[in-house]
Length: 306
Image 1 (cartoon, rainbow, N blue to C red):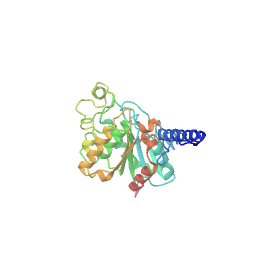
Image 2: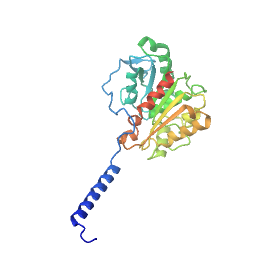
Image 3: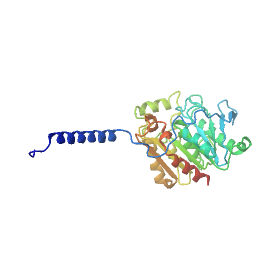
Image 4: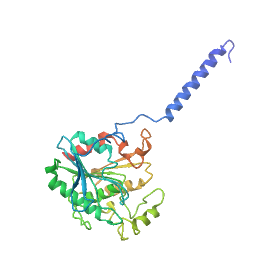
């Protein structure tokens, strides 16, 4: 050390450097602020249906809740999750879809038949019936039916994808009406060639094809896979999946994206993979709508509505 250099100044410089380094490390480890606007998970959970338990068919589960907006931009038909064996139309409505009410989009949340009593393709048949009902009867109840978008979460997303992509094909057991768009959250799209779950893919197949499974009788894996039905003529699609989904592997979304690219649908599919640690774990997991950019959803629906 040079003669006469104040020791106090050295200590002060070292202290300031240590503080600066600590702050830098802390900033690097702390979650960054959200990189874009999102709708929080619990947003809109006090919104009630305008009409509840409206029958769209004769089966006890063929019921719909209607959420009417003040606009005329179109209707979103939503299918809940629940592994094809449970679930309820009133639970876990994505906050991102409820947000669209204030932008003039109506929302219809439907029940559908479940396994084991009603395996595949009963739920897809119910979706077809609900879509026809919206087109034919919805206006009398206040729905805007110029444009109809189908949406789903988890098992409901699987059904929604089959409904959207099977409409221009000879889909087994259901005469599917065409829709104008599809919004898919965290679904299974390839039962035949892509692993399903991060924890037990074989167990999934045993449950799905067993006595209480949705894919009874065995042999329905291909027919129930949206990748089989997707082609270039299918509607605009917004596909959303959490990068850390603990229930359905991210590979399922990738399989659908790769299929879209192969068949010429790639330009009509917008894919959002929610991975930012700025959001809570479930937004990066199986409920990724709370990590989806609001602008992406708004732009997608507005493009469909044009």
